[in-house]
Image 1: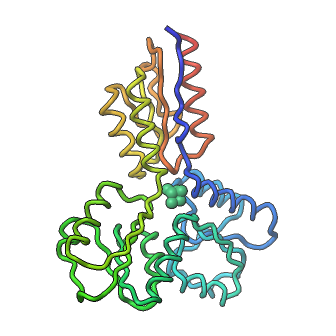
Image 2: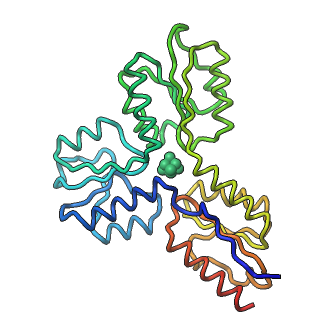
Image 3: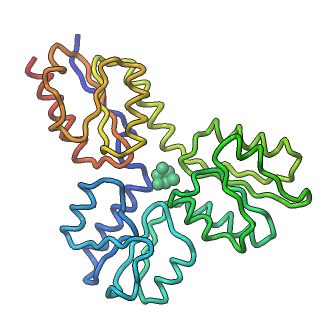
Length: 289
Ligand code: F3S
């Protein structure tokens, strides 16, 4: 039997995260000014540390903008509120907006419809920075965030209020449909836009398909990356010999012995060089046994 490695095409950074990281790299090359990111550009310690070494400063929400010398501020893919954008411009930062276009679309929808008098109903996790950013583009304070069937059941508003409904980009599709049904069932006038991005779903589907075909499955991700853990669970379900590794160093080479096929996928915050290292290590073992 042919020995081979199947690497998931969707492994690693999604389009929005890749774009944000590339934006920081480009600014580093072209701008002599101080470069900041608003929050860590990505939830991966290696990438953030690497950028810090190259001179990128990470500003946290709530940091006093006046306390630092203004420079270039890159906004990460999650986006930020309009107030933060305005504050940065007022303090003379040059804002480079790497908000993912799929998130930006939600900002535009909630801004337009709240101005028209709609109540904005957001399906997602209120404490997530993406949702905080979205809330910050709503005119006024007529909005609600719901995250469960129970909250959808409890939702109530004056009968003649028009509702504009959007979702967090990474929300589970079936759960979203279910919550929309509950809200519509109440008889409200609802304009619902499915703003879920398919990147997460596609990564999970592909991982499951590969795990079904291989002897050993490697899932690469950060310790605290919940989307990588989820990938691990999905793969483990299909392939008993599924392993979660942060880098190539974590691979237990003995488990790869007498293996013909190895599948590899990675969470959204895993950089390409780590994926390549894992792939090369697996390839070396396959060649030697
Ligand atoms: Fe990534 Fe943008 Fe989708 S950041 S997960 S491509 S919404």
